[in-house]
Length: 273
Image (cartoon, rainbow, N blue to C red; front, side, top):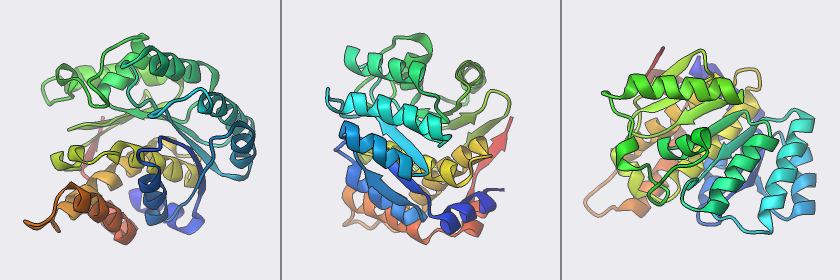
């Protein structure tokens, strides 16, 4: 299943518009190129709407909000909806500040998202209308574990049904659900959390997979999550005593560039519930 999903990305080379945060914008662009997609970044209001129209998909990331880019996010999202293009929301740090929380909630209200991807604290903030996060990392009490997995699955499925979006909660155990079927994914390495922007890269990657597979948003999102985690595993095998988190970031992008659809099919570690 994931083999065909990834083959579509490689063959179609989807053009993805990213309104994303400036901390990781270069890494997001390189990740899109590595998976076979094509990136474009535009966050000026008039430019963003026009660029959205020529792209196949849209990735909105609220990691570095400002009063100039927020209107562009709303306008681009609505334009993508008009065109029937997949739209991904990454609510980075939702719950940290009023601006982030209100912007994320406003986007969720006014834009129809194909996939919403975040950590458990960010998703809880959107679901409950308020919450707390520690920086852009999930609160310790909110980590998804084997012990609380059943409850987390129920929460994610309920939120997916309420929003109509595929909900992707990433962490030690990843959850991807459309409210009916749920992928529990166990790819990845804990060292990936030492790199700024692996989540941002994953959201861009998810947008490319969803754009290349518009009729399979659940499977596309799950495949993207598996691919990112698998690349983290492959990249870690390259690490030497001289390597640190900067090398690891580059190795992950390299791993995505070299990953084949067949390798993704073999290496994906998941169960469907």
